[in-house]
Image (tube, rainbow, N blue to C red):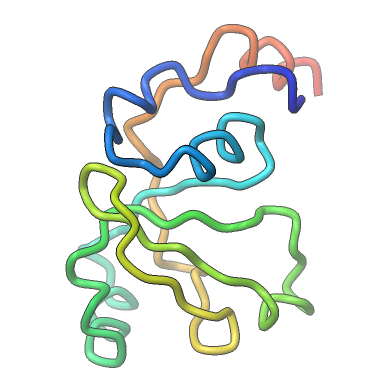
Length: 116
């Protein structure tokens, strides 16, 4: 999958996304999701991590299982993809905090995903 571009409109939606993150997301090494700012977990987590209020997206590895979650780093991004801060998996969990993004998959990526 690493030779197929994943998102069609990521550079337009997130123009300030650092190139290294863009490349690892596009090659499906890392995942990006929007933050659900209306869920209770978000509101609770903001009281512990106030910087989260400015975050709109999070980048993480979808390949790390729950047992190894504490070793992961979550990279939080602003509205235009600018890197804001990172948090260790030992400090928080993403479960219940994520929503779908407004990013569109490329036809090539969708074709490969449908075959799975």
